Image (tube, rainbow, N blue to C red; front, side, top):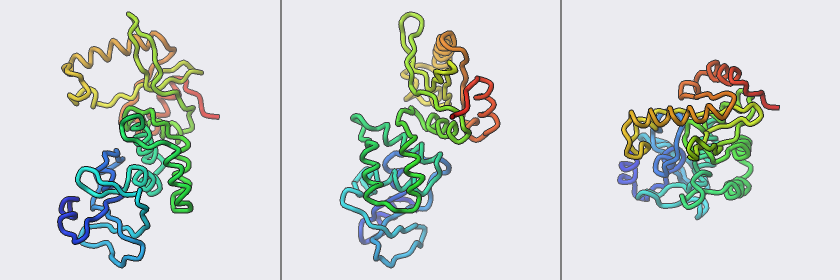
Length: 255
């Protein structure tokens, strides 16, 4: 059942939460698209999950609810904490990076605000995972792929790189490297297909021109480091491939 159908077939306007709120708010999710819809009821409500709707009985403060895109949903901060608490460390990093990265005029939430919300709700199931994610998420990732890679670096015990490091290219131009391990002088790039396929990321250029520009950019970056390595979506799910790339590049284990 769609969110619109749920909203149109209830006497009291529902408050969507968890993955349903994430879809409305534009928070990236790891895995399949969420189904069925998730709604919130008061703690003393007796309504149970049924008819293709998952119902959560929990207390919401006034600032935990917002209207967005025509729906009532849990706020960006509350949705983020709920998703992190109920998911995995890896999916949590993606969520936290996204909401932290929206700070600065893009309607995001600060780390302090997220931690204040956690302190207000503590204790709750998944709070240790939330603490770990909020300690490690940087908010610097430009894509979900970069967030996933940072989480995998942690999981596999490799040193964390600096993110979005600026290098000067030939002709005085600049380029931001997704990852840079300073101690081992290794540049890493998260190479998702979206930069080639999605017109919104091409800036009016053809796919062929984007490929050529990226090749020239890579040549400039390779000239300024000891090793250059590209990471793909396949590396997220293939632990052996990711570890091999990191070892071959000389990225050290974390202390």
